Image (cartoon, rainbow over all chains, first blue to last red; front, side, top):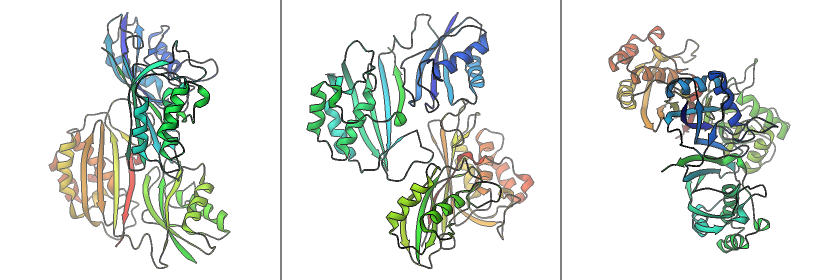
Length: 246
Length: 246
């Protein structure tokens, strides 16, 4: 048996999310089926994060155990060939120690969120960014984002379906920058609650067009109450960008 | 009657190209139909360039004449509303002089061509970039591109269907730069022959992976013969990015 570490890029639009679901297609299932076709073995693919329906990944990390003797390069090529034309690609593949686990060994996760700040509808970016018509003040959003850094009870920014044992998390990075009509929000933490990035982005957008002050954002955080959430951003603009390992 | 200048973004994947065609959907037809629904008038939309099937535009310039009294803002909003869910968006709209013509007044056209240089298949970029598996030397491509600058007979880089009166054109700009695994080729000229950018990009790719030397590229140009063309790049990676007016 060889454990292979995978780096995975995917377009989340056609999927119910990363995780295998009874009621629709998932990224996990697509990769597991590809591996089974190649090896004839039952395959279980694990990942650093379980993205929601419609959320994308630039470099999700995952792993799979395989009995059949294959080089990492041949495995990567074979999975990509089997996946066609699904919008999922293995962009890197390496042999890993048998006890390395893409989820449990992960000590840092990074996301990016893309907002296209314009009135005109999106064309090729439809489903790949959040189109937001009201002018957003990226500097005000960046300043307000600092209130969320560090150790907090993030209950306000947590989906009712969150399975995390605790709502207390440490947010290591949350930045907002403008590039033409596009805003990029970068978030990093050891781990995130379900919907946490989307909920933080939604509330930062309220700050960005002046509906909320930074004080309102702080009050929402301190309420530690899902009802205090101002806005949850759609999945469209969210990308899993990196997993960190020791 | 008011003449309106339009800036138009579109995803070329579902279209036969800019120009109205009997046998399939076109960007021109989609916008003309939207205008007719808004005004009840026959509409003729002109543009600075006529992109091919599958070619995209970040900022195509065009114009349309309308009798119905409408502000530029209302017209833009109405066209965008009518176009939904087509991947075409009017990103700017202004009243223009009655004798301003988006095609005939245009003194410069710029294109970008995106190559994703990796083995893995594309995901969200499928149809939006050219995936090229062999490693490309962007510096060698950039250096070779300089041979094509200036006034030349570009017959080698001209489609058999080209309607231009002369194959002699002046190429003002052709640069190649690498950004991670992506190569961007920028081209600018007063006007281009049919397939000229794609044909230049295809031959630069041959230089990029060492199949052609810069000398081969020069020989292809000097042959002034379509049979000397090494490779025509697919439409996927091509974007019309700007039209210049005096």
